[in-house]
Length: 255
Length: 317
Image 1 (cartoon, rainbow over the protein chains, first blue to last red):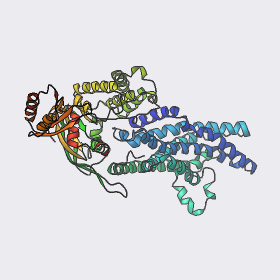
Image 2 (image 1 turned 90 degrees about the vertical axis):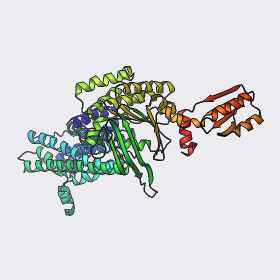
Image 3 (image 1 turned 180 degrees about the vertical axis):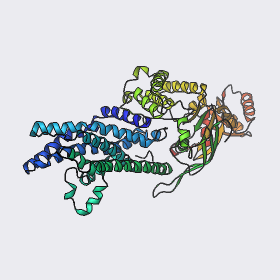
Image 4 (image 1 turned 30 degrees about the vertical axis):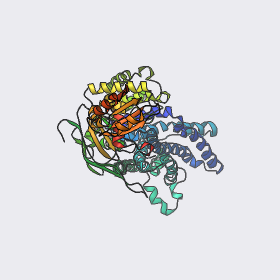
């Protein structure tokens, strides 16, 4: 827990020291405008929930993945990666703390996106199920951070983790159905989508914005938690294996 | 493992196998014991294996074979026990979060060493004071001079109250005053009973702060002795600088048993090198008998030991 908190605390400091890591806060309102314009001119006001949620997911997932790669890359550039690994704290827990702090701050994009919807399009995004909404947000943030730890393991192996992390976000946007419903994807893609926690989380969050009961809330929330926990567990295991491998090969500090 | 040893290395070997290139033997059967409380210098040229040894001891690199223990804990099998006991300080610009302040750097490392918050605040303040950075504590590290960064490096290495410190060329690029101050700090740390393994190119540094020095080259240990003993090892290579001796006398002296060379220096003097114990006295007597009054003998410095032992490979190392 101390390692997690140490990571979270230092990440908050880094976010003020590296303002470029806050780019999603500038892009999120722009995405909202684009998506709302498209749906409005397509005559699909029923898809407003998609337009309201998608920019937030893009921001959060970008923050999680980018920071996962950026953390590994920056530690290498700074020459601190080896010392971090040689410290008594779990490397995975530190990374988890850093990404969790980032995604928690990323929730600001909810307010940005919905404020833009209100001010520019006069569209009010209403949360009809507050409890479910908050639970889903918390589970989603944890799942994002957990999954990003798994990605960090891969980034340790990559020479240029930042480039990798930038491009790695796009498949998740598609598989997560965060803008285009998964039901519109080819059939053979859907099983893949089912193992991406984003698809469950996005469905749930959209459901909390609609009137009426949420279909199978708890099982779906369970899937978000389960997939996130699996991502974290696999990530920790992969990190352990990969750290042994790079300690063997001597490539830990390779940039 | 020898009793009382802080570092115990047995037949340590490390081979790097780069892709599409021949394997490189970085350490080749290294055995070394450093008693607790010793400042041990590791002296060698680039690529000698110094940093590889430090990396293995600090658990970030695995040996190909052999064993290494720190305070009785195996660095491969017992990393969790080793890591809280060690501190690592690398030289140069890297190793710090440059956009964080000195204090924030230390606080982060304190948290990684699982210290309670109160201890972190107390220790970071004390260490900043100790390394003379209190007034710059809240300034970003990127604004620091190299010497200040090095001092911050050392403070960071001490945040976990390390019993064994690995200092990998810590004074690289420091100006002489800063380096002297740094050595004073090392002496203080020794006084506190910490064990220090210091890798360096700097002979003066090794001579001034180390209890013992190991010469290493191409992954092999060449000798481990006190700086003074290492100097004595090649006392047979003692030098005599002579001014005013004529060519005939010099030729006669050069022919004496135990004299290995006589070389004309840029300032007009001649440097006579002897290679046998006792030869110096004979050479001096002959020179004085020959009417030479301007002569000077000197003991070898550690640098000469280094050059004599490892060879004058210059930039080829």
